[in-house]
Image (cartoon, rainbow, N blue to C red):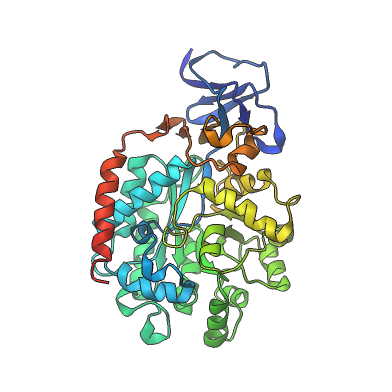
Length: 452
């Protein structure tokens, strides 16, 4: 008997690629899936630990590909509740400029805990705020990631185009190109892990066309190629952004992306709403990834991502919760449900199915992050799993388990496993005092907005 073998047996339902029969369950060994068992089949070698999943729907761990952890401190802030993106940002930038390392740590803990409880096992974060005293913001996030035992793609964001030079952010929030590139290299060398099973990775993520210079976009692309890391930014989120690009660069957003060397399969974009047919074709041909953020797009009235046209052209689609000041939650299961409903408005019910949106939240999101070892229940993949029960009142009378998770509004996973280790048990995060975290986080949020 091998002490590292776990049999998660006889699940109520299990989401597998191509509908592979896995009703007998899955075997975990050394942090990976070693067997996927059909109904009535038992493990080839006895396991010392069995978990009876007869009351659970088993999913691959969900993967969040766009977030701003620090924004949990400004959820539902009254001055911006009814604003579209540009006024929303202009009002919030001065508040965020007061961020401290201690507040960022609390904000990151809250964001990641909420994600983990929603069944998310891997997350990206786009942190681009480095005012004085916040130079080591990514190091703070690394500490939180390690403490919670999730996987993360932490993106070294940047803003270098302040108000004085025609950008949107206030001057106290921007950095020089030299400081941005130097810190980017430091983070890659110190933290970026490669290969299967990586826990922490680094990507380069200039914030947006209206907050960084053309030079920092170009230099980030060169640096990413030199170090073989990924690129991330916001693009084509609003018509205001499109107008900004036309006025400042004389180019539409995708033309600008190509000019600065970002039109490649190294790149994934947040939002990707306002593309014309030719731009969709070019994005697909280049293999660019698009993170669909339905709740944020509805919250800010930005528009609807043309997911199916992008997929048909060859682009990759994943999901992201976006920041908790434009969502205002960090639940990837809720995001998946909203993706189903929003996309059905565009494409109809028959083309947007629960299976389709679940594939975006798992396989598609894994591909956005360049991960081929995550997002599927398949032999050889990492043992990252989310298990949900269907015994709440909201599920009573439901019939198809996977559809019930999404249509009936599953919110909280009962168990979550990352790399073969349980991180959530009985709906609670192992080793985290959530009640104390909430007290500290609420106080930090009050202090941040106290003078506004």
